[in-house]
Image (cartoon, rainbow, N blue to C red; front, side, top):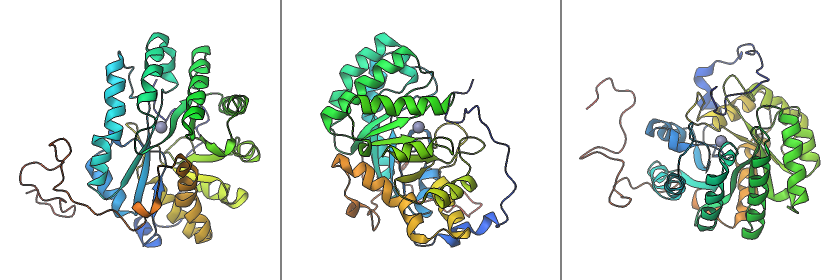
Length: 332
Ligand SMILES: [Zn+2]
């Protein structure tokens, strides 16, 4: 079983092709800025960073997650969290994109109880570091007792550290898992305004919004939400407390899902201010409650200095120019 974000029991059949030509979508979003609040850049390439910057993505949040196979020891968790606040943030800065992260124990690995207990001891060392904007992504996968236990423990950690929570809702039994995740957050006294419930669909969105939580939507090829469905969600529910993300990771996914969805919304007549809210501002408002986001840092783009180094390391190989010419057949 492929355990990426792509697994989903409610796979909808491929929708009819978009009438609009897919080739000129950038012309619909010229000059717009985007914030992708859920993307796993550790699994992506420099080409992705460059394409994202070109498409107007100025900032992103990388939640700590499952790497596709189980980790066997605490040290790899430690190195992974360190890379999210270190090397990966640096790599992002080299493309002019402000990088934030959320730190947490993912639901799958909560099921290795002895290791999960060690990870819980480690988390407090990371959650208050600069650029950590929440506890995430946490929640349920198979909805086991161990997942329940470590989800609750991390909600308490979020409360203690005053950070927002980024909830991964399960792919299987999504509606039940989403309701359960919210009920437990409320039981632990969390303010729903501090909780971002992710991977919503048409079945879950109403309850999430009605209870005062933020509703995030993952636009993911073939599963989860297609972006035509997303347009209809915004048409029906409006833009309040809704945000769009790509959740691009090591599976088949699209790091340009947010700008592409914005382009589709423009084509389909969603007002520009509403598009700005769901692809930029709402994510900032939700996660800025961490005290770690100042949008002035990225609103006009970061200054890129690709000659910078991180612990003596650069993304450039000896003598390289910062940006390859993507249109040239010659690779020099
Ligand atoms: Zn994720």
